Image 1 (cartoon, rainbow, N blue to C red):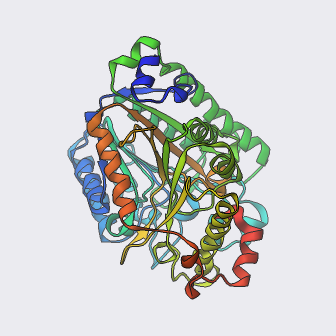
Image 2: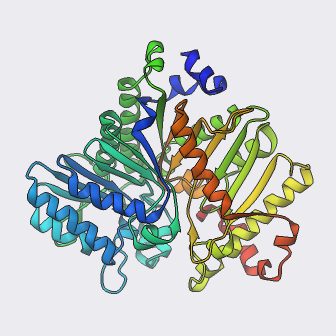
Image 3: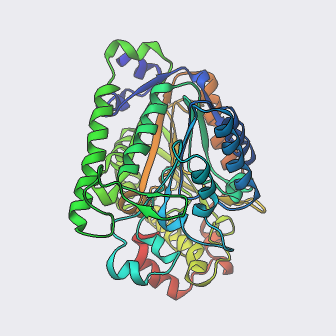
Length: 469
């Protein structure tokens, strides 16, 4: 077992083989998709070619022409292939939000009408949206309480793991990450099973867009009845899943040499006290060596105190931190309070920059802001370069933004890929280089610009509501 980790110069990371389920592949089975348009084309093509299963988990499905073309492609496949089944898992708050008279729910309802036994739609409803919150919080605001945020797209035995949702901007000019793993049945089964387990405590939608819980699989209810009972029952479902998968996919010492690449999935469900991913992330940050380097990206830079402590005080590695410039923030130009969110992230970033300054760590920790004309930034994850290595040997990719929401409020998942395959290492290196090439390194002069001045009300808002975004 040591020989694989030594070959990737990552002896300090070998704890993963004992603590996480592992899936061996060859690096040639993994392809990094770099452009939103290519991500969309991959979804279209694979929805048309799948013959066994199409399983999609996302925050929501958009309602424009591209999204409808995707739904139409899935419908054609279901008509042509009687053995094909389809399953969507979305978030209830976002999936039922009506814009222009349509929603994710209404967009998918026709498929439920046509394929009642082979196509299903589930929407996770956070258990903390109940009582007066549920009664009085309007659409959009109710999404601050908690969401289904996993982004998994399964086509037969291949899958794409991403941070991107299924909507037009993520198909055109919103930069994210997308990694395709080809022909890995065990990993596809893992995520298919995870979606099934989450669906057990989610609401199922029928063709009339009515929602219900299957009481044969769940005794409690997400927003009716006892909160503690629902959280315990749902947590037990996921804990059992984690235990089963860890046992089923545990690594033996002689297996590590069979493949040049290993994949370790992690899950985070703060409302259910599932903290596997955040614990693994801390451990990964802690495992970096002196003169090693992390490139660490977040679509919304609001890192938890645990992650900040690792970066600032405990890690000896170098860090290049990627975040959105206000002009590349998805909330730019939003109405009301949401319009202040880009300022909020500026405030958080500047406070962190000042800490780096105070500790004299600018040589070890660098901050970069993504800014590209007409584009927004939603890429997250990390890449690790061992000491004296020009190529990364590890990446984390998936849905978490590494903030308080990701850790405490939402359902998240990502994978850690460790590889000694030079071609895959080169792909991962090019991916992070492409992002950095569209970034400017942050300095005092940038934060001192007039347009970067943060309104007082935003500073007060951040102080009281930092855990909600």
